[in-house]
Structures are given as C-alpha cells and as structure tokens.
Length: 206
Image 1 (cartoon, rainbow, N blue to C red):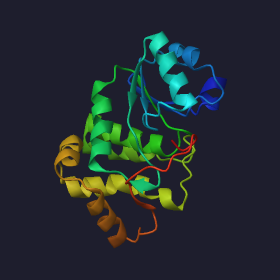
Image 2: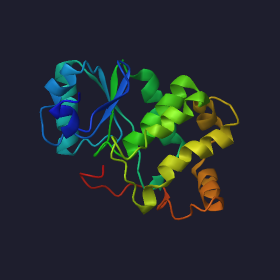
Image 3: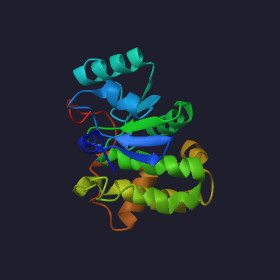
C-alpha cells in the first residue's frame, strides 16, 4: 500500500531498489522522505539553478544526508539537444543506486526519463515497460498539446536506432532536427513547441 508521502510526492518505484520517480518536494520534509526509502542519489531533471531557493535547499539537504545530487535538464515542451540527452544517460550511469528521478510534478519529464532509463538498462525489449511509464494512472501523465512528443520519442528512438544501444544512438546519431522531421512526418507537428535553445525560466518550470 502506498503511504501518504508516496501520494503527496507522486512517488513510485521504476524498478524496486534501483530507481524511483517523484515530484519536487514542495511540501517539505525531503530528507526523511528520502531516507525512509533508502534513496542514495537524486537526478534533478530541472537543471542546475544555483540562484533559486528550491535548488539551494535540495542540494543542501542532499549534501547533509550524504545523498548524491546530479543535475540534468529537460524541457517538456521543447525537443532536447543531443547534449541534454547525453547528460541524462551519464546521470543514469553515475548515480548510486537506488536513485530518484524528479522534475516539478513528476508527471512529464520524469515519465520520459524513467522510460529512457528502462531502455538504457534493459535494452529495446523493455519498450513495453518504458511506455507504461507514461500512464495517466498512477503517474498522472496528462500531457498538454506541446508535451505529446515525450511519449512519441520512444517510438522514434526505436525506429531510428535500428537495434543499437540507446546510449550509442544518442551519442552518435540523434539530433533534435531528426526528431522534428520524424514528428512532422508522422502527424505530430503540433506535439512540441520548438527545438530547445535558450531556456526561458520560471521557478516552477525549471
């Protein structure tokens, strides 16, 4: 049975004892929350934000608790650069287990990252489990118009990689321009806002 904390923070195990997912700790109590679940690392999908209070608090708590803190950055509405995805995969490889994936609400960027982690860990045979990370329930993934590319990315990646490991395909062949062309050709031209360039930041989005 899920605890009140699990529900409050949209916490779920992606693979028990290995990787989990959740939202930002807007209500507080992050350190005991992480310790009770044995979390040893946070992969922050909102990027490094030294000047924002939530990032300062999160990194301080992680340091005090001996929990590794890794910053990656995704935008749920803009197609990621190769560098952004390379950093995400690096974070998967660097993070002590079990680690926690988190964004603002734990619904969109976190679903995307959890899906890529399963494919990175287990290969393309994990696609069904990866796609399940985008479920409305229990993960609350209700994508808005320009967030629909997130789920479609898995199909694009599988088709484009032609069996190559996800990590190698991203590093050697992926570009956001190729993703855009594929989305447009498959009736998904309205599923994204733009290709990522310079972030327009707000405390909740980033």
